[in-house]
Amino acid sequence: MFNIVLFEPEIPPNTGNIIRLCVNTNSNLHLIKPFGFDIDEKQVRRAGLDYHDMAKVTSYESYSECHESLQDNRFFAVSTKATNRYSNYSYLNGDVFVFGPETRGLPDIILNSPTIKDKIRIPMYKNNRSLNLSNSVAIVLYEALRQINFNMKI
Image (cartoon, rainbow, N blue to C red; front, side):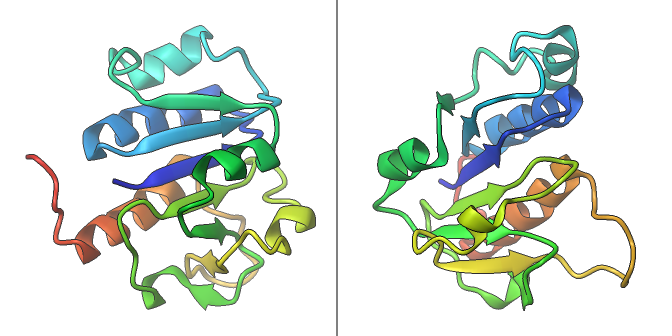
């Protein structure tokens, strides 16, 4: 279905929640090192409950390694710095949504990379902090699923 990329995730429960979300939507999770935690950490496992064994999670040493693995798909960078609303696009199976670390977001080198089809954002009130990472992933992922009529086994 869809691909979720977490670039240098920092908060264990967010990654655990996203693992659970990916299992329940048949999405693939791609994690780019370094992580701010051990992937087997208790907090990650607790948030992901018993979904870890069902999850399709791949780890990479760098963004370029991740892109090389998924290069046949379109990449969208999700950022508060973007101006284009996430709901203004027509998504396709296999699309890749790249999210940055919780405390600093995606670096400019990724945001301005030619590998990124476009930068998208979730609308929020001005001058507020960003949404929780796992909530942001869910918002974007479910919009993409809605667009393909939730074409998944349910």
